[in-house]
Amino acid sequence: MAIEITDVSKEYFVKGKRIEALKKTTLSIREGEIFGLIGFSGAGKSTLLRLINLLEQPTTGNINVNGTDLGKLAERDLRAKRQKIGMIFQQFNLIETKTVYQNIEFVLKASSYDKKKVPSRIEELLSLVGLSDKMDSYPKNLSGGQKQRVGIARALANEPEVLLCDEATSALDPDTTKTILKLLKKINKEFGITIVLITHEMEVIKEVADRVGVMTAGEIVEMDDVYAVFSHP
Ligand code: ADP
Ligand code: ADP
Image 1: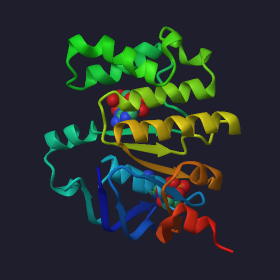
Image 2 (image 1 turned 180 degrees about the vertical axis):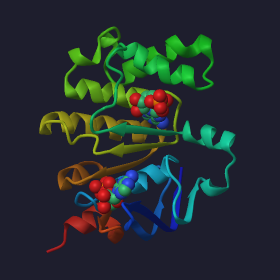
Image 3 (image 1 turned 180 degrees about the horizontal axis):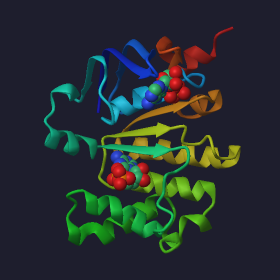
Image 4 (image 1 turned 90 degrees about the horizontal axis):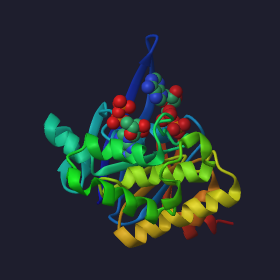
């Protein structure tokens, strides 16, 4: 799905002090692309993801996802829309007391997914990420790469139209990072899912993104096709 961010700003107040996490940001993410947002820590990348994911509201401006203005949604529609947005995290955010199977089951049960189809859906997801043999394992017995595969399976459970990746490979070694990025590319191709990823690593952007935005102090200071940005002298 296409994501249109128009003049979006976000302010926080910490102990009476105003922090401008995003300054009048405008950004168009195209349907089906892999868009990478790069920048140093504190640049405003995660704030932008949280706004797209409907976890927070912008202070000013407008976010439109596939023709729907997110600011105008009623509570019920907001929840439905959220289910169409998957997210994966640096620290995976798996539930340690649940098995791989149960981690995914939990998300499907919390949504309106047809109960009869839950087991077959979980099998399908685990096969997609190459973890069918780890169904009954607990997160503590998985490698970092395997944990992120579970994270990806969970994020895809409700067939989202967009996948948001928050420093999803930052806790992984370079080889594992490559395999996870390959999996993201495969998912992007197979399902046409729009992927937005934020990272502080150039290599990640080079490896996987179609376009890149460079973020500094709450502003997107440069945006282009990845090959154009990286062929600068
Ligand atoms: P990045 O993801 O690029 O590291 P963030 O979006 O996390 O950047 O942060 C941007 C700025 O907003 C930082 O100055 C950060 O301290 C501030 N910030 C982010 N979230 C909050 C919050 N919930 N409360 C207060 N300040 C915040
Ligand atoms: P709670 O607020 O009780 O943690 P949630 O349903 O918000 O319950 O989250 C449960 C788990 O599912 C969390 O670990 C979270 O990271 C994950 N999760 C929630 N929403 C999504 C989503 N859209 N995509 C992927 N994972 C999600």
